[in-house]
Length: 422
Image 1: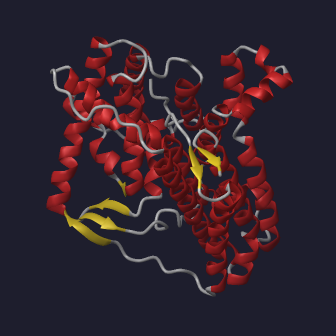
Image 2 (image 1 turned 120 degrees about the horizontal axis):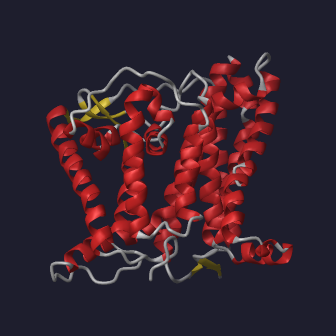
């Protein structure tokens, strides 16, 4: 069986690993340096339509139909083939719905809102949108993100078709019961809306009234308002959960558990606690950099600054998720086609395992790109808060250093199952 986030083999680096990691971190620092030398606020370009309304509507309608078909097929194949593992239903859920949609949203914002199968279901049931009657508690959003990753990483049922069907039915009931009740606040209480919303804010393209337009990577990260508590907490849950999944795949993690005696704790309990605690290595250093930024932003509290700079963490969180799941995506998509075709006696593609070299360089590009976008977004926030270019550079210099450190650590963790130093 193909491992969820591995490629089954390693390759030898043509250069020492520290040079790769240092070069990646240096790229992040260079983006900060170039921005620091430009003594003016970067100008965001006006959206430029690439695909007209007619073409965009056709494309989105095809995707909407495909999403509904995949939604139905998940139930059908979950019943026909209830075997746990990389069968059609788990692949449609994790690769098609979660990772696939996140990838699409990271390219073009607004696609999910037009193809959401639960929205289609509401239309078919003629459930008209009603004015919001109450706002959800702020903790519901991060709790739902935690529950999503808990199901994947901790429950042991993440690739069990029957468990997936149960989760989908429960989620469908949640949508039909509360989406209209929460109104616009639904986007901060729904795990899929939060996750896909994060990806969309980092996207260079967007669905508009005129079609699909290029808006740039920073347009939706240049937000004057502070992040809501729900989104702010959710981004740290996202960062921590993806990192925990990376760490658990390493030999060093197993050695740590044995050496500390923590292996005696039931795995579900241990992983549930760690899934929560792994947010702290991101939250605490980030707050420390906000304390330093406060020296050039008088009158702003640490938490106020943290919620304003929090938008710059979104592309990093999305990059972590996509980089970590690249092997699953490029292996899982062909597997969906292969297994569905096999039901009709067709033999397509054959076995395919991505090159570790391809995986490693894709991960580098995604991780470095996410951090560079984060640095540029942080600079725009610093310019708005500090009021001057020099103060902005000083106020987010520590955050840039932290992002460079995150780049090194994340790529090192991702490299452990994939590469060996020559």
